[in-house]
Length: 164
Image (cartoon, rainbow, N blue to C red; front, side):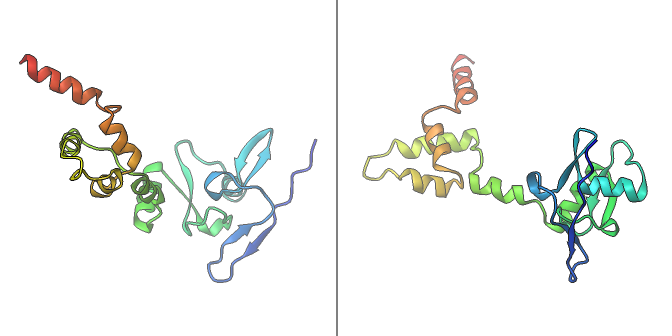
């Protein structure tokens, strides 16, 4: 049987975090290891070694918001809901900003307005870039909305209005 790999870490004197240097990191920066043929996150492994089994439905969360940290004093057990609340309070919802950068979906009303703007005289017609900026979305979403690639629901509504 293989010997488990030693866990090497550096202590950040400013935060008290034990930052792992010896193991590869999974998505979002969590170090992991092989244990009994399974991949496990090191912070979960450390919790079990220090405090015992993790109850079903609980997450091992970080007080320090540092996924690379394995300091047992920085770990706490919480539900997914409690972890989400902690993420909101500490401002760790990076995906919100990424979603904004990627653009947002357009409502049916916005698609109608967008199409009206594009049926103007060609010289007065806004560019795709201008429309994307105005509607706070991406050029691709504008092009898809104009090409009716997202318009199935919208089309059905318009058709239904004709038959009422």
